[in-house]
Length: 363
Image (cartoon, rainbow, N blue to C red; front, side, top):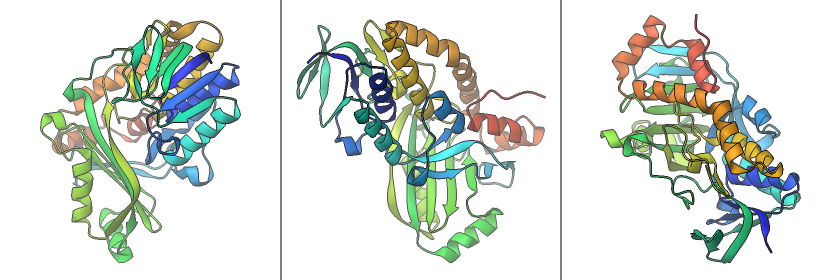
């Protein structure tokens, strides 16, 4: 059977593309090297609420929604200087449930999803896979930074790769967790973001809620700093009240300018297209938005080049501006970050804008 669209990758971006394209009437197959129940991210990720609307998707609820709009404290290093964002419009999303929802939606719309299939390359316009050749009019690579790389995109330079980790862990000692929150002057559910703890572009995020603690870390190891996974484990070793891991994982995230989004009949999206918001290294929301845009371009017959043009016109300026900020901030240490906070260059409004992936308004 020849398909209208073959998607490599059935995580958030790939499954969303399969869903939208199948709903638009295209014959779709999506392939993933992992079993379908293990495809995509397996941790909690922050996604601005408006991005679900822009992506044409219902907002998370139930087990998929791990938190919403809780106070956010941006701390300079581990010191006393901080900026407090009392509320924001970012949702904490359990990616395991989001991927499942998108995959089920794609199947219900008539798409075919195949797990455990390795894509070996593209030859004469045909996908060569471990399950045999796959022919399609259009092809989409949503297989991530370390995936199939069908567009021949270059590997990002080491300085443009963030090593991130996220885990949800049990609380071993509730009294110790309460003492930690008291020392930091925050309540349960508040996110503490220790910034510039290992180079300017590094964080340790901590949020205690109920009997669990959510930890998010990231850094640029190319500059001699410990990876996000090492930062996370070091913090757990330091805070003896934190117990065993419940779920989570780690991943390398491409930063910098958007990559090649179109090459002939092939399109890229998500991490494979480097559609990542560099200021905090999140690409989930952009991948969802890009999936809708690509499905619309293919269903209308305009093809991958129109999709690439539409995406860059809509989101290119935002991504370029924040990547410039990322390149500046990665050279700063805690003292410089604290100075910028005291000077008002980093305040609650600009921090909230970055969290929500919007351009800040200047006073």
